[in-house]
Image (cartoon, rainbow, N blue to C red; front, side):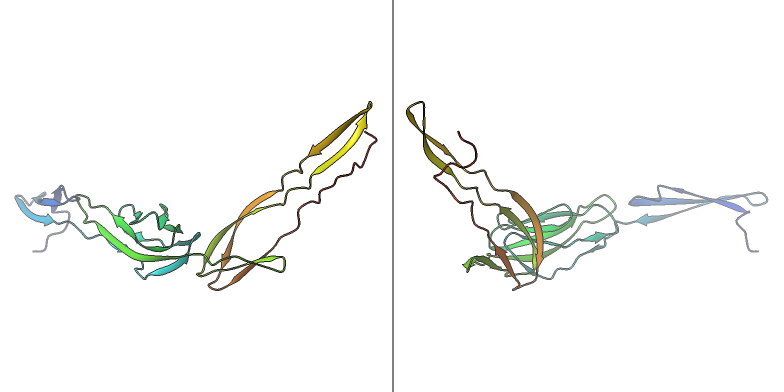
Length: 212
């Protein structure tokens, strides 16, 4: 005779974590008796996915490579933070020229084995910046996102002499500071960035505007 689920109940003890699980089957209604069986839950492997291909980026640029996992929190680390750092989201920043290894790791727990993936990052030193015919040229050695900081030129100075009340006086003041801006630009390998620089304010030794 084939039993249905109305003829018995099934209970488990500790059927989630690693260890021994006891299964108890108990007869219901016209069926009586109890059967107990055991099985073992073993620790599982963690499925951590990330490319381990080596990359090259330029000093001062960034590159993001993320790892995915079906369990746990991914933690990133750099073997040499003097060469490159890595953020909690997997973004690598090139600091100095050289090589380092970036590792993504899932820590081991009671129910899962830990896992790691890693790749090598080569940081290339920036090319020199050349000043040609009033413009600066920068060629990226590697593809990446580059941070720019630009400063405006200082204004010209004023210095002049004048007489007041029968006495000679000299007035001198320096020009105001230029503006400042920062931002990022994405460059391909060997792409050239051109920066055109305006001139500073001219200086004068004469008084203009007002009678003093």
